[in-house]
Length: 434
Image 1 (tube, rainbow, N blue to C red):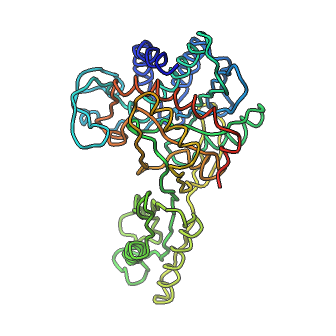
Image 2 (spheres, rainbow, N blue to C red):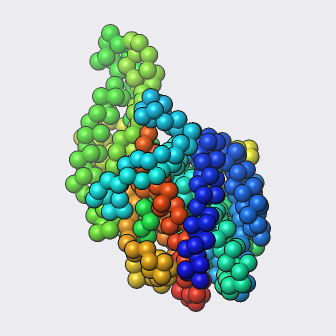
Image 3 (tube, rainbow, N blue to C red):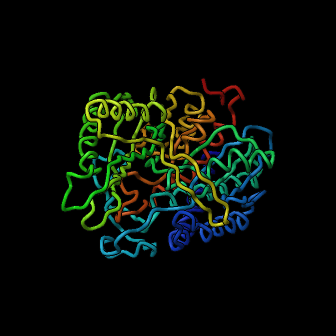
């Protein structure tokens, strides 16, 4: 079956590439993913998926049923992408053009550059290249089923909205509302976030912290009559940088906890007025052993220490929460948090994925993401075994050199199916995380 699978992947590659190009040509900024959602739905219906639907949040789902009972493995992508930014930075490429040419790309281990055929465009590497491959992995599985091969378990593709804003609204609503309401369960997840054909086993968590430093307004000609919130914030910022750096935890696989100031504003922000409020946003990356609540407390301790030293220093800290509205009109406000998570190379779920790739002759290598993904929900929060596997490479994400290797796409089509076939041989207790 694995030899047959390799031939089927080669046969499907041109169709997957053309589908990826169509996806790239349709802009899908967060909250405006309808066009891309429609493409995914139509493609799965055309390919003959057994069940295809869209939920009220705009997420899309396609299911292929096996010939034998077994686990359900979710193959997941997100529908949205980040803004392409200044078009002049794209080296002559149209970010929505989906041009194909020969270009330099890093090899799998980032040790050399290789000339290879690629697709250019926004979201080629995050995650339309991987999403196209996952859908066509389903097509490969259907061809195996048509040829009479026994298929254990169910393959479920999901494309979720609003991943890029980081609150994970689409994934949360899919697993907490849509699938339970439809009586659909799943046992594990394969994400198509960028991995360069490696198996990715985790990433740091994230919490967005919002700090308000308070002051008192006065005329700019008499600043001594007020309390300048920005001046007070400067002392706070210096203390935060030093304190977090000094106490940052280190995880052997995921790396070091960190904090980055990402936004700062003040009010009233007018001529001749000393500002009475300074608003600061921090991106705090956390590792196992930390929680969003412990990150808040760390900042609160700094506020308390500064307040004890300076009676005019006043500030508050909270987890940011921004209302998000899907293209369907449904909306919700969720705290901007992601749990840190990782899974062991020796976990049966990961060993099955490794076995599948090995049977195809693909090298088995492991890695961890620098950025965060929706797997924080499924592995970090609801404790379903999860792994990342895709043709895209993390280096090219969110940049004006966004592109995906076509040779990796062919390998990913087969790799996804091989991983599925091996995972579905596992017993039910193999899907339980400690």
